Length: 345
Image (cartoon, rainbow, N blue to C red; front, side, top):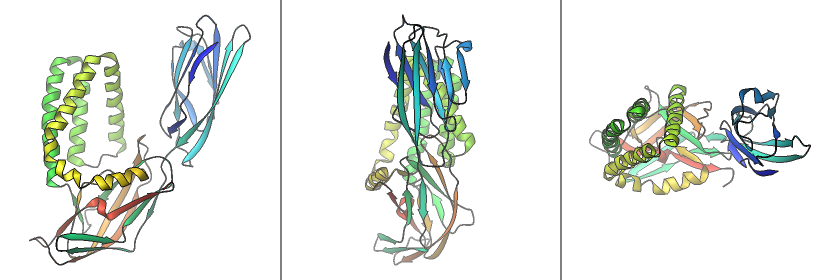
């Protein structure tokens, strides 16, 4: 009777769980989906008439299918207190002739769990063009999800955060090339002009302001990505042309940044293993010789755009310099302040 059932093994908390069920189209059935209502809720149902959907306290009953033999749904998930939660899903397919099939599946709902270990002081020694650090800030991810961490400095901080000139040049060239490519795309596909304009606006915002993990920005990102996804599904030519515009803009700008990124390869390999990503890792810290007070906050999100409580901090950085720039300040990559680890290695 049942031909296939798809339920994923795991999902990040806050993301939707896709489910689909296929059965013999000649067999009239009802489908019941059971799940814990504290962590899961029905978001969307496909191929079911409006009066064929009934939900109460973790029990979703489906009947009156538009086309018999298939049903698809999205189950929303909530953030949990624990970084790992096992969510049982039970699907019962009942035929009108009395036959039934029950499928049970446990889904792992996961998220990151970030712990920060602050040193009493960070020491930076600059000598003959080499930089050495002692007592870095340690970011430990005790959960299985990937965390995205961004560092902001307050206006009254002794330390300034800025982008390297190579990054600025790359981003400016990329924005110019992307705008030119997408203007041409709007002429080819005028029906998607509003979506393209909103996408361009989001790109311009992140390039100018760097820090984008606000609820308003993430809501705009979610909206425009859904619009693009829908457009790509409806129009393959538009999807291919949009991808070509993005790739072309990226590679035309790449020569301005390739050398800078080579220095980051070792760092990137280490953070990927520990599931901690510094969103502004390529930024530079501008410090003066002697004691510097870095005052600011760490903002934390994840790949499902969940926001976590920001961490305000004040850390002392002592800079011992034997050779300095002409204005008496030094610049080091932001990522050098941090080391990462995880519960799983």
